[in-house]
Each structure stands twice: as C-alpha cells, then as structure tokens.
Image (tube, rainbow over all chains, first blue to last red; front, top):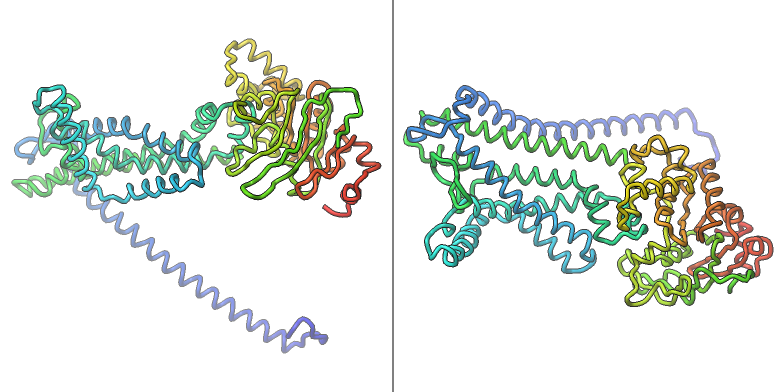
Length: 325
Length: 258
C-alpha cells in the first residue's frame, strides 16, 4: 500500500492494517509495562533500604532518647549519660565552618560566573579543579588539615606568638572547622554558580543599560536574585559537614571531653565521631548499644532536617522564579 | 547617506561603524546621522544587523564575548568609543528598552528608582518625585499610583514594558534606544507604546528597532533599512516608504521578501 495507489483500500486491506496496529499497540504496551516494572523495582529497593535503616534506628534509638540524653555529658566510660558536648561541639564547628567557607565559595562562584571569561581555558580549568576537589576522599582532607592547618599554620602561630608553646599547633576546633570548610567549598561553589546561572541575562542587561557598573549590577540585582540558591548550597554544606568524621578525626575532634570547648584552640566532641568511638572503642558493647542508637538517631534527625530545609527553600525559589517569568 | 533635511545638529553621528563577532562581521560599515528629538526607526528582516547596530549605540554589545567595534559614534560631538571612555557614563546618557520586558523582581517604585539609587541619589523626596514623573511620562502613573509598593511582576505585559520605559526615563537620558519594544505585546498594548513613543520624541531622541513596517511608518520620522548586515537606505520615513531610491528597499517594503 503506497499513497500513490489509485484504488481505494479494500476491506481486506483495512483489516490487515488494523491487525498490524493492534500488534504494534500490544508490543508498545508490553515494552512500557516492562520498563515501568523494572524502574519501579529499582525505586522499591531504594525505598526499602531507607525504610530499613530508619526503622532500625528509630525503633532502637527512641527508647534511650530523653532530655537527659540531650543535655548531659557521657559518663561511666560512655556506658551512661548523654551527648550534650557533642551536639554543642558540632554546632560550633558548623558555624565556624560556614563563616569561613561560604563567603569564599560564594565569592569564587561570583568570579567564575560573572567576571571570568566563559571561553577562557583558565576558567574551564578552575571548574574542573572544583569538580575534582569535590571528588577527593574526605580522609585525604583530614590529612591535609593535619599537615597544613595544624602542623604548618598552627605551629607557625605558636612559634610567632606563644614562644613555641603548643596552643594552636595541635588539633583544635578552628582547624577542624577550616578543614571542613575546604571540604564543603565545592558544594557551595557549585550551588552558587547554579543559582547565578538561573538569573536571567535580561536583568543584568537592564541594570547595565541604566548606567550601573558591573559591581552594582552583581550586588544589587544578581546576588539578591540568587540568594535562595546560595542559601540552599549553604544548608547542604552544613548538612554534609555535620555528618563527616574523617576530616575532623586528626584536626580537632576529641574522643571524650566532659567540658565544652572554651575557645578556638580547644578540642571538641562531635556526634559523628562519637558514633565511631561508641561502636569501636566501647568497653561494654551491650551497655553502649542503646546510646549508640540514640546518638545515630539524633545525628540523622539533624541532617534530615537540614536537607529538608534545603528542599523547601529550593522549592520556594522555583515557585518564585515561575511567577517571575 | 544623511537625511538631515532640517537645519539641526544631529544628536548622534555614526561613521564607518562596523561590529564584529570574532572574525565574522555582524553589521557595517554604517554611517548615518540621528536627528535629535525625533524618532528614527531601524527596519529589515531578521538577522540583518539592526539590533546589533542599535546595541552598539550605547555599547551594550560589549557584553557579548568576542564582540568588537570599529568606526566612530559621536553623541553631541563626544565620542562614545575610545580609550578612557567609560561605557557606564555613556549608558546613563543613552538609555535602552529591550524586546522582552525585564522588570527587576522588586516593587514598582524600586524598579523606577533603581537607576537613581545606583547613580547616588539618596534624597527620598527627590526620588519619589522623579519616580512619579517617569511613570507619568511612561503613561503608567494613573494605573499604578496606588500600588507602588507591589511587585512589578504582578503587572500585565504591556504595563511591564511601560514600567521598563519609565525606569529608563527616570535617569533622564538624552537618547532612548528601543529594541522591538512592542513585539511581545498585544495590539492594544502596542498602540499604547506607539502613542508613548510619539509623545517622548518631543523631549527625547528615540531610536527604535522594529520588525513591523507599519509601526515604523506610524511612529518614525526617519527610517533606516538594513539588509544582510548593511545599511541599504536611510531617509525620511515618508520618502523611504513612498519613493525608495534603492530597489531592495522597495522590494522589502512592498513585501516581496523578508
């Protein structure tokens, strides 16, 4: 049957065509069904794993969770007491990390996206370097922090200001925070660049055409437009920082401290490291287990809350962008 | 190729202006005189270089990587290209309205006040007065005076475009460049804008790119026809549309191509 056939199609032709179409429909239907089943099964596996982890932790962690647990330091060789110093330590570390890392990450992204020539090989090289930084294993960051911050910068400060006494030349809150800031830089840079890319070029042109300088345009139009995206990146960085152990292992986290960190050169406890200590170093495994579960539950709750906050902020940003166009 | 039949100094004098994108020529060489306090329309088919030419008049094309300009543009005798000349200062004298309305996601008032604030104006009363004047000039004041603190994003397309015109007028430029300002608007909003352009030409020098030949005929005192990156003909609008001297102009305005 071609279109040039002069004769109209007979009933038999039409029946053959209908059969063909039916077969094709059935084949498509089967293919669609198979694909839906395969992808659905993969999704179920992911959900099942998440559900198993959550169920186990919530069931075993909840009984031990109490106000005392959240507000008291560990006691009796970590077989009793709570995790208060670890929570405080994490909050302090994360705040310092954010103060140190986010401004540098945001500034880097602004330079890369607003000032650097998009076609220059240098810009491309920097982007690749940032991507690679994101791929460096976190234990390597820990060793870098020990070598650079603790033994080079810290020891240097001691030599210059403290007559060689060990003040900053040992693992400390400030070095752990800076190491973590380096680790989370790529998260901030990538998220900020993405947010800057989402700012319509028309807005930059509108500002420049009114006689604004590039600087005025970036700070009055571009960055405010990108601020929710930057905030999302910051929250994700904080969430990442809260959960990492390896970078703080050599740079500032303490095995056990009954007191809260007093200043930048103090060591600190962190829930993530505390989990590691409880699960590997406990003198009495059975006594530690409920504490371990409860600590993990607190850690998960904190990072989940942060991640959900990031999702909500991003959704709000999308909605606002939708209204804007 | 000047069409200055009136005894008036041209506002903008363009000589041998050529815009390059890398090694590729975007438009030129163009030479023409733009008469002050009149409307000049740039017409031609898509890709003819009219928008590129327009954007070279306030150095907006510099934002495109690889773009280069040779030749000369003078605004009241002052060169706008050359070493030591700040494009920011040029753009304060030569404002621009874009094809797609692009209000900032700020309030109506802050949109209009933006150019004033970045120019260093701090006096709140002065800002209010100039915002009102600009919105009145853009024929938008009556529609928005009760909601100046609402988001500009809530305005209709035509209102947004008039807001962008008000924003450009607030910094009191001498020349207003308009890049197809009505192409995304419905006929009623378009009529508003055209009426507005007519009124603005009493005070401002307007250069408008348009796809629409009827629009050029309606609003412009002078019209330049661009084709394939070259200025083909430039004359008074009535002359260009009734007695074009170039056969390609005639073909275009009679609808034989483009």
